[in-house]
Amino acid sequence: QVRLVESGGGLVHAGGSLRLSCAASGRTFSIIAMGWFRQAPGKEREIVAAINWSRGTAYYVDSVKGRFTISKDNAKNTVCLQMNSLKPEDTASYYCAKSLPNYADYDVPSASWDYWGQGTQVTVSS
Image (tube, rainbow, N blue to C red; front, side):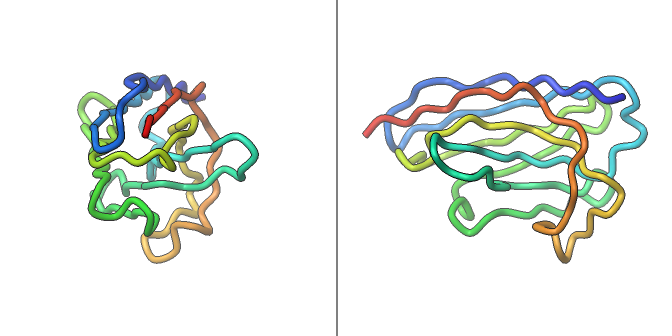
């Protein structure tokens, strides 16, 4: 079992910044990769960013490249998502997740995820 708890969401004006954090507890030795997902009302959940827990290799969806940065602290079992230059279309519920062992740096969209946090709301006003 792995428990994931997100924090850091909120309301921000367009162009602003937010930093999301996700703290993992439990069987953290089993972490291969961690990811951030988002889901807006009426839309499918999409992966935003992911990071290889041992290598630190990062993945970003095209829409956030250059604006978002994923980072990790292995000692604290924490993964963060720094979000800069936020846009109204970034408004969504954001979730962190732990990958299954099928995670591969070269094909992150095909990875499977087994544990999820409760989500944190990010709202960007125009």
